[in-house]
Image 1: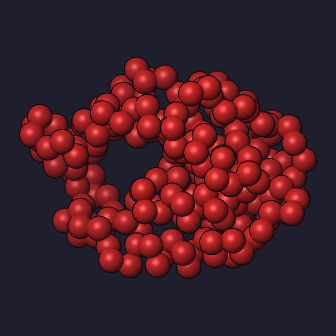
Image 2: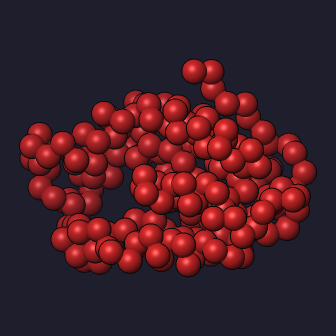
Image 3: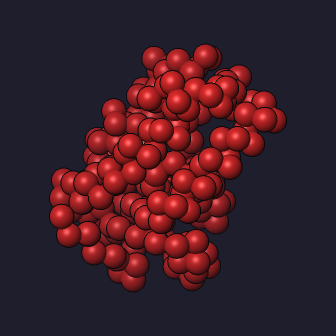
Length: 199
């Protein structure tokens, strides 16, 4: 499938809703937080909404996503299969961090090891499981990323086809990310005519 076209120069209007997509280790949450600060809008962190104690999915997850993205401007990560359709229907811009697989894998492994060694407390009291579980748990974050590393090459074109008003920014390197943040992101606003209340 041919990659979707980039679109970084089209005009926008006020009230932007931005999704940040990319495989684990690409820097989705970091970029989303930076972008939210830059645009002075809320950052809806999907992991914090999804994970309950003991890594159990929170039953209120989709209801919270629905409520927090129903109006106003925001930035959120584009993740979790059950939330992606809702998010794509409401967003104006999809920023795809299409960084190289070796880079994202190295970042993810370093992050996972650091969190485990330091026993960093994540969402709702969770901590990374023992490192040995990478060999025993097919849902371990590192194994999952490796297995599904190409999924956005299907998900992104499908979302653009389903939501023609959704605008794409595709960034392929850390240098492109920093340049886009400095030069283009401050001008981000929503595309004129977007159905703001779509769900």
